[in-house]
Image 1 (tube, helix red, strand yellow):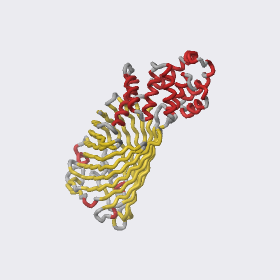
Image 2 (cartoon, rainbow, N blue to C red):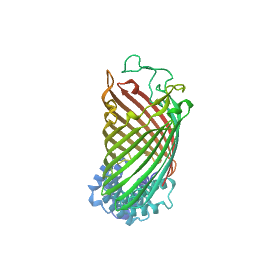
Image 3 (cartoon, rainbow, N blue to C red):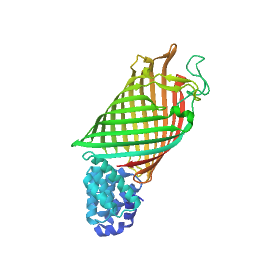
Image 4 (cartoon, one colour):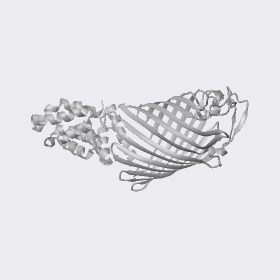
Length: 460
């Protein structure tokens, strides 16, 4: 049971005694009961409004307790803290009220007092309480990185199955192209399914240099290997390096930096990506956050040696130089966290960009735009579930080849995940993704499903 639920059930049982101690008798019972009922139903805003409609009950311990919780959950943390402080003057040893007060300090951004309260509660806490308290202490440490140097990192291991590891197509005539353009059975462009294993690791650091100003940096490495030896040509590696500066000013967060990414395919360098990034986020209140990111990327491809067929009898060189491009991209988002015990968080985002080929290949230049919607819930203390829908359109600038119209792609994706926090550091995660890309050129029309399990260790 969470401390929040314990708070409601415990004080329902003690309601009569507290009212007697307060000297208010039945006069305070009705407002307190009304607020409590709405809290139990998850109608936090209504509970807060009901409490505001009963000013004569302020100062009654039971009413202050429920009013404090309602105010915190309805986005009025200042009033909630005052009510809980009044309650704790009467009952200073109540752990449930102490937890709610610590949460109020956290919402207000008073990290020193929140940390003090949560640390005191950690002494003698049961396992469920310890986990919840530790989540807040970890969040406080993250916020403290604005004025204290901090380092964090992770390691991840996973395995899964991919129904189309190469985003390939069925053998036969290629749709959208002249007769005779076919994919033969066994060619490397024919879709292949396989099991895979993956590893990833990363380290991030923050170094404050002035009030609200900090330098940040990080490095990540990941790799994916397929089970069947003939599919090793699709094995991949990704390495990334980020560095920049961040500024926190009131509710605004600004970041400016540079990302360097290197993608390898079949143990050969395939793509170097250099990106300049500018980001802005605004925390409107404890439930709503908006932001925007602008990126400018230089994409440089390398030629690699590969095979025309999966049996590796026909060796070819896949030239990548003609694909070099520069991408300008803008994305925006809005995240809303609902006042509910499951902590539902809904995010919607929009994006648009322009990708321009640097080798006079206008058939490879494109305009792109898309949208994404996702939701996450935490119905149990250790479990988080998430789902997302994505759409991305790409419209190319020139005909694909002589007599063949310009390529048009529409990308659709569904992703689902379930994560279980095994401990403070270890997380077990299951992921599923289904992709359906439509294209006027059959080479780029494919379906793909991936299912994976991952074990992650976070250190801080």
